[in-house]
Amino acid sequence: MTTVLLHGLGSDRRQPLGLFGHVVRATRGDDELVLAPEARAHGSSTLVGGPDDFELDRLADEIADDVRRVVAVGGGDPAPVTIMGISMGAAIALRICLRGLLPVERAVFVRPSFDDRSLPRNLRAFPVIGELLAEHGPGGVEAFRRTSVYRRIEAKSPAGARGLLAQFTAPQAVERAVRLIEIPRNRAYDHPAELGAVADRGIRSLVIGAPRDPVHPVKLADVWARSLGADSIVVPARDDGLPAQTAQIREALADWLERS
Image (cartoon, rainbow, N blue to C red; front, side, top):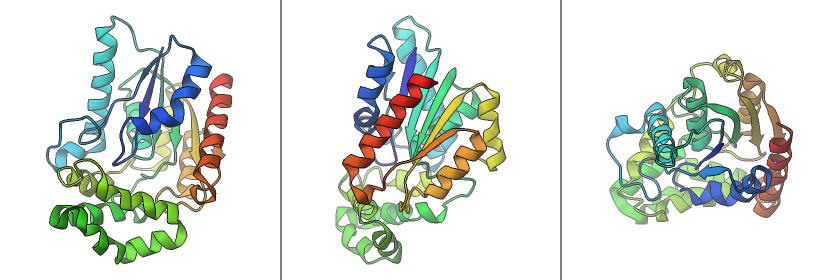
């Protein structure tokens, strides 16, 4: 049995391992193979590439290949797979489920941010950051603070705004700026009705959303949950305290894993 944990845009494997790792071990046991692969141009990945390399399906293919490669080294079978993704990781996990790239049995989508539009309003800050990094390096952060897209997000969620500013100081932020420019241009699906195919594959799913999050709108989490026919939960906003949000995500996840 295998659990695959996928990080968000600009983050790395430590993000989902920190959020989910203990819960997975506590509910699945030490025999569970837990993998947290890093997407192209993230974490320890040495790959960057051009715009076409950052299509969601390309990223999903690479993640699935990584999982199969690790499992093959151990001489095992990945099935059944539980896949969990945060934000961009949720979109990649969805593409893996829809395309049947791995034998997924359960899927958890945390704070989804991608929908059926290229560059939706909630993701427009990222290409702005990417362009500023490419042109000005980390010093572009001051120009970003003056943009309307930053001020709009800061007014709704100071925590969300701080998360965006952190993109300027991420490892190799300049060399990897293309990821911020290209990945938000992807669609997670063509129409919400398409998500029904996940349940048709026999995949049970959970969607976790949070209020007052302009980058990960709770209304979008509702769309995902309804379209997937998934269980869903709304956790406290990050601006009400990250520890409270984290604790409730872990509690909800543990309960769902034990029941599903």
